[in-house]
Length: 335
Image (tube, rainbow, N blue to C red; front, top):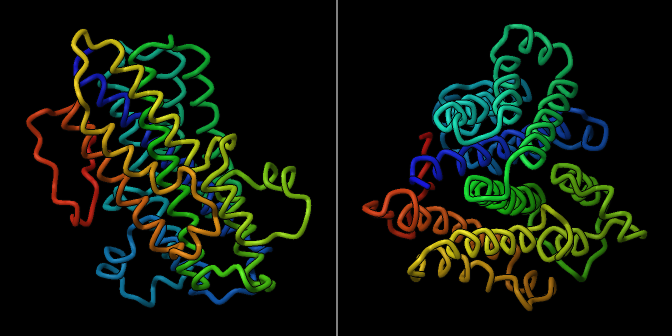
């Protein structure tokens, strides 16, 4: 399998996962209800933080705009200069699908192509203005349908492994970022206090944004407590969007790819993955919180960035020189 195809599959699924995740968190927030009484800064600014776009947004539109619903939603949904807007993610997912069209199934292509044609049509902008929550729900469902087409029609071989690699990388990244939004909205998590109403609303929003609301309450039938939510989203071995679950799946994908190498080699990405896994394996949520939830999540996010850069050295562009660990942004390829 040539590196161009491997990279295309990786970014195809990663962009679609990012678009779906963004649609979910924007839909939860724009739907109102739970957080309707929260100050604007606690509702809208954290969305830019979790997307990693706060500095760029403020530079273009000013700090005050980060508290305005319309400005934030437009930027994270439609802005073509924003590489993580839903529009940009769907556009580049479709472009990567076009590049590797001969490798993916017909149903996979038709699913992403239909999503792009819907997203790019004027009617979708009208739908967004008239019913933002409905628009984001449609985008979330489109992500589910795309994933269903992938797993239902593609052989369990290298192209699917690289697509899964991109999906689980992005899920781990998004869950860590969404969980960290709690720190930016409300401050440090503590175990020695009861969550107040505002805290509980934020935790429920985080569960909804991660697609884990129902699963959490089936497992935890009591009152929402912050440490329980954090433990579920970070350390659960069965939740498909928990950080530890996703990192374990990344490990499986790397092992599958490496198993086909006639002369197995040490992978830089395996070492990078191990460093991130060590932040969570055999650790309790109490240890993580006492060490500083925000600091630990930052280390996880930085570790995933390093893992992504390592994949380029191992598989996509062996001559690529990764940035220093302190680099502010992850390498972002569209091809």
